Length: 355
Ligand SMILES: *Cc1c(COP(=O)(O)O)cnc(C)c1O
Image (cartoon, rainbow, N blue to C red; front, side, top):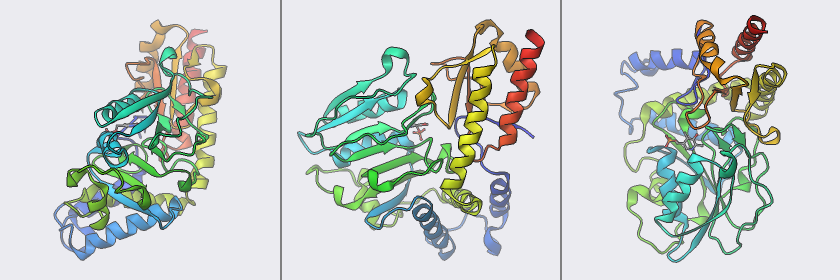
């Protein structure tokens, strides 16, 4: 068995892969593949309804929020958020915590004025800025809750009176949160929710339709809401697999239960990074992500050798992002503690060999 620490597209539960593969051949005894059924069929209607119900239930989404299944990835949301929330002549506030956060801000700058309230670029984004203030005349405040590349995570929702839009691509469904703290949540599914090709958006209805600008329909949330995510053909297969994954999560006991597992998984790995003299973490202790664990070696010249050992031990996807170097272990919901232990064992084996 491979231990998949890849950052995204990421690991999903084995039973999800199995059920999805059966549906590719014969979906729900229809004699048709999930890949060929109409998105307007009653069979797929049941899938999208159940997926929405699972999202609403698992995240406790209030009824005045709409749930959308879109395409275009989180990157499309970088543009859709300002198009839909930033009025002509208005201003938005952004927190800069890494590549994704700054790409989001860059897109907003094409639409209107953007204030960067704080940035951690001075230390290669290894921490989350604190103590900044958010201008009260901003139309919204945007931040990235988990910085997939740098292994930092925002655990406390910033306090502000302005609406909050958040990129939760890599920590949605990993921990308890209160949707009511946010006005708009988006997430590319391929980090913790399902396969690539699907983007989840949860938006408070009352904040829409107030910009006074003309938005191309495909980028306007409202036509998608009206059409129940069927404004155009949705990502049928990705939605189906996300549904299977959310069923799995629900059967496990939901987000609060997986959060406890995720805490233990992260602690197990960080404890070894802190104990093992050959390794060190790159993110500030208090901002360490529970989803993406970034670490390097005290002697960088040994990194290739550790990567080779990792490969031998079936640990895949742990090479760090080029902007941080070293290693990154992405430990999303479906990654079991057994895989964490396998990585820890490899780190100890490496230590024994070299000390
Ligand atoms: C991966 C990632 C993105 C980019 O997602 P796409 O779906 O590829 O556009 C954006 N934000 C975060 C936090 C990510 O991890």
